[in-house]
Length: 272
Image (cartoon, rainbow, N blue to C red; front, side, top):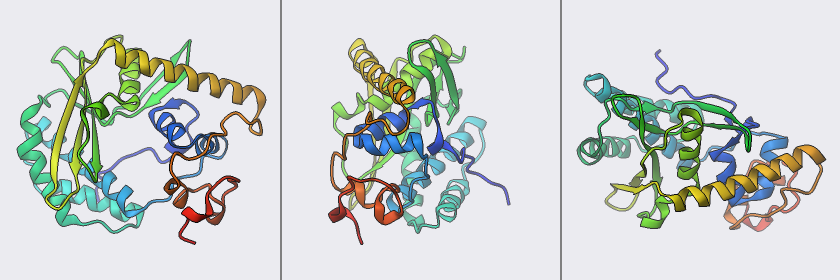
């Protein structure tokens, strides 16, 4: 059988500064610290797997459009492949709804002709060390200049205008800058909102000095933490902040009830 969804299997064990590390450290510094010293794979759950399945389906839609080929059933097949990989159930009928909605609502809003899908950008920098990431969608002009960074999401609520000015999208802009020397002018979320009548929300923002300054300040801070942790060793109390909300602990791979070493995991958040 043809494998439609190709993803690195060791992203959770990366040592570079990445979007995943930045967002993880924002959720729980202690978990981010363990991701550096232990690098265990996250524990799949149905919501996480559905989000990955939508990512895979959207990737196949754009690949078909870019190639001038019919879309057909390949997006559904890619989503099913993700569910099989994670051994988690997903609603393939909802995947079909998302695919149809993407075709009618999202596709007309952008030029996909020179889109890159999950490009792997890994760039050494003097100030931050190695930056690494896989933006979902990187749009380009015909001459190859990057024009927009788009991230595919699933969510239980509509995103706010302020949400699009996020550190993860800002980091991808910095990563593209470091890789190409050019600054994409737009960032955006393409979000499948999972309400009673699900729909696609397209939310974009212009890349400006405020977004770049805010992201740069956070990347400076996290890079300094990582340098200090590497200097002092894995037992040093550098990444010690706890979870922003108790629910993070329930499915955390580093919680004691999952066989992990975390001393601050909140037992009341677990299902055990």
